[in-house]
Amino acid sequence: MARILDGKLMGQQITAELRPRIETLAARRRAPGLTVIRVGDDPASEIYVRNKVKTCRDLGMLSEEIRLPATISTSDLLAEIATLNGREEIDGILVQMPLPPQVDARAVLLAIHPDKDVDGFHPFNVGQLVANAPAPRPCTPAGVMEILKRSGIAVAGAKAVVVGRSDIVGKPMAMLLLHAHATVTICHSKTRDLSAVCREADILVGAIGRPAFLTREFIRPGAVVIDVGINRVTDSAVAQAILRGNAAKLDAFQAKGSLLVGDVHPLDVAEAASAYTPVPGGVGPLTIAMLMANTVQSAESRLG
Ligand code: GUN
Image (cartoon, rainbow, N blue to C red; front, side, top):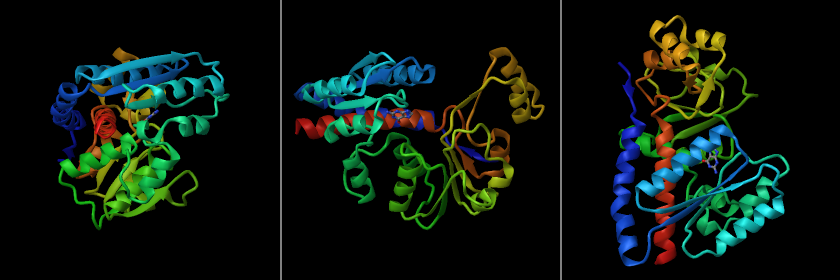
């Protein structure tokens, strides 16, 4: 039986470890503060941002959401960020991605002061990551490293394959695994014989945003599989193809009208892997926990 790596539990452990640090800051100076900027009405972003703000408040941190219209110009967004850079009580600024096409996303990332960049997306912090120097690390890959560490999975010497090369997940994930002494391969849409490369992996990380794409033939028996994808499937034919006649899961899909599935095939991974992260309840909760950790760390550094 494959071991299920319970991200919800590990996320709760991490936030519980943050509580005394937050209480100390609040008693001595003030609680850590995070501002999340959401541009437009992307429904997925709305849910992510709501969870981030709620978790902050549950932990006794200051949290605010700034909602801006989808039509905003780059210069107006930069002006908002400049104000936040200057506010003493704000330790973290997060601009939820993706941004509308008229906004220059790189200019936005550059505008956030690196000390308040709790996403770790500012080019200075990306450079610090590459150099393995202290700086906030991107939350999702940092969360994956916590899962591996807290689950006692050996990374040093392991063959790790990362499927996906995004700036948010794939690239920083590969860098963190490399710093932990894995032998790392990054794959993408142009990789030749992708399944054969994936089958080499002791640790396989899926971060491509394609529902249930990594099926049995991508997974070496006994591999550890980390699924970063969260895809909502509403097409009944697609759901049926994924669920392959699993009656209980098909009933659940019919009742709900949608299926939440990762980039890894949920039935195949349970059979082939030695350990894996489920979707939901795997990597997702760690992303939020690491954002909280980055915000607390920023407050501690800024308040001395
Ligand atoms: N959109 C999806 N994931 C993320 C993330 O980790 N940070 C930000 N800012 N936007 C995202």
